[in-house]
Image (tube, rainbow, N blue to C red; front, side, top):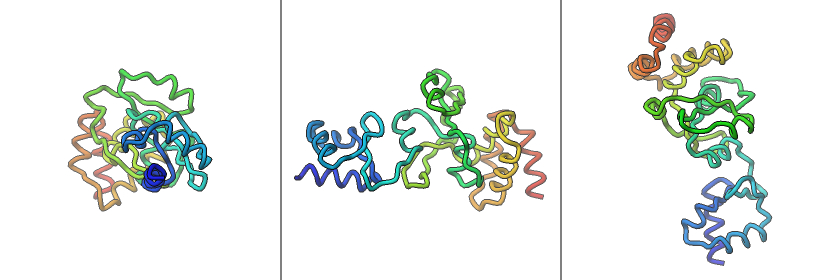
Amino acid sequence: MKNDAIFNALIEENNGYLRTADAVGAGVSRTSLGSFVHRNNLDRVSRGLYLSQDAWQDNLYEIQIRYPHAVFSHETALNLLNLTDSVPTKNTITLETSMGATRLREEGLRVYRTRSELFEVGLSEVRTPLGHLVRCYNAERTICDIIRNKRNVEIQDIQTAVKSYFRSRHKDIPLLMRYAKLFLVEKAIRQYTEVLLS
């Protein structure tokens, strides 16, 4: 029963999820985990990831667990950062160029790639609407990304996001301009800045 207490604490801590890696890290055997999962009718949602019957499923968290190197970006980041009201039809992630993306695309994810020297620029963690921490680019990086890829993003989403960003108390214009230079969108960002901050 000592193991059950560990499992229940992990489920509580992870808002209904139990990860094999967390259980093993807490010193519990895989056999005990299997027995607990069976006795408590936990749903296996992914390899090494189980969900309690009374918990809400969090697709973003599950994507992050399955693909720990992925970072939520573009429209999904806008949504997580509360810079848009619309929910993306496809979740969007960014990978380093060296990483394979076939499986992720097959799962219905929109995948962008970036060079390794730019991959960690603006990397942060945010909470999903269901309370799980996931990797996501910050607002400044996301604004640069959607402007840089404006052919793939709805113009209305770009306008809403940029206006929301400039109204935010947490905006960091010097950081935005540094990122704009890095991602070669300085001219477009300056135009938005002149209009929205005048």
